[in-house]
Image (cartoon, rainbow, N blue to C red; front, side, top):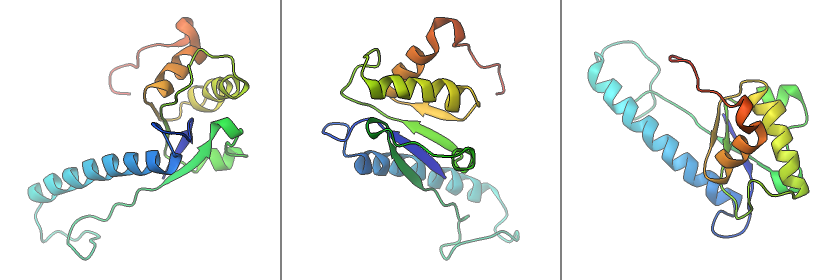
Amino acid sequence: RLMMIGCEDGVTYGPETNTAAMFLDLICGALEREAERADAAVDRDRDRDRDEEGSAAIEVSVSIYRAKAGDYPSSRAEWDSYDGVLLPGSLSEAYGDDEWIAKLKDVVRTELHGTGRTTMGVCFGHQVYAHALGETEATEKDEGE
């Protein structure tokens, strides 16, 4: 279960539902290809949970929150209910001083980076993540993390 913090509802990065669908297509396609490779390498008689087509059942969903509207999970439990966070593009500038961008940077510092949440930022998303942390806090992950 993933969450996406949408940062743009206009073209070319929106509406957020289209962006979430694009991420789902990408992620599910990769998972399907990986499952096919794994199935080819595993004895087919092994007792595993299977769907009707015989491949391992994997379910992926994306819940959309809207940064420009100040829409974020309202509790720690709600944040913790997600396996990862998608932070996509925007027509806005990551170094901008709009109120919603300042709030998003605070969310990056406290709820994403501050808690070690698995996050994928794309375009504006990775730029705002970097701007939120500044040069002194961003570090390379140790190998294996």
